[in-house]
Length: 338
Image (cartoon, rainbow, N blue to C red; front, side, top):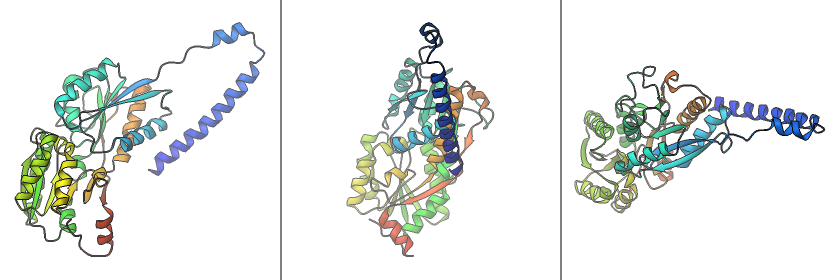
C-alpha cells in the first residue's frame, strides 16, 4: 500500500503546482477584452456515473468504496468533478440483481462495478457493451468472464481472489482448529443457488475431513431463512459455524443472534462481520484489491478499453479476530467458544 500512498501524494503535489500555474494564467489575462475571455470558456463536462452493484452488504460498502476512490485518485480523477458513485445492493436477494443492472444501464453508467461473484454472473449475461470492473470476487471464469487473465470478454476486467484467499479452504480449517481446539463438527450455512457457495462448502468439507473434522451443512436459500437454518444447524451439535454465500450472509444478524445465545463461535470470510459478533475472519486484502480496481476504472474513464486490461489476481490475505479471541491467542492460550 506504500506505493499507492506515494502516488496519491505525488498527485497532490502535481495538483498544487497546476493550481499555481492556473493562478498565473488568470492574472495575465485580467486585462483581456471580455469577449475574448468569454470565447475561451466552456461549460464543464458532467461527471461520469460509476454504478456500484453488490449482491449483499457483508463486505462493508464504505471500505470498498474508499479503496476504489484511492485508485481513481492515483489515475488523476476526483469525485464529483470526474465521476460520481451510484450504489445499489440486492441485500442477498439475488433475484433483484437483473433490475439493479438494468437501472445502471438506464442511468447511462460509464462503468458498472460488480461486487461479488453473483453480480458478475448476471452482468455477463445482461451487459454487452458497457465496461464492467469486478471486485470482491472469487472466480470470474466460472461467471463466464474469460478463460484466463489476459483472454476475456472485451468489456470486462477486474480483481479476484480464488476461494476468497484460500483456494482449498485449508487455512480456514486451520483457523477454526486454532481457536476451537476441541472442534469435532463444523456447521456450514451455504446458499445452494450460488455455485461458488456450493464449491466453497465442498472444499471446506474435504479439507476438514483431512483434519479429522466432520462438516454438517444446512442450506440458506434467502436471508429470511437464515435464523431457522442456524437453529437447525446448532441442533446438530456443531462446535463452530462457517458461512458461505450472499443469501446466507444477508441473514447474518439472525445467525449471530442465535449463535451467541448458544455460545457457538461463528467464522466468516468478511472482516466486517467481526464487528457484528463473528469470532474470526480469513479474507483477501480487499483494500489492496479496491485500489487496483479503482485504477482500472480510472483507465477506462480516460478512454482505455477493458479488453486491454488483464484481470488482476489478488494474493494477499489477512486474518482478523475479535478482541476477546485476539487477546486469548496473544497470551498463548486457546480461544473459548462463545
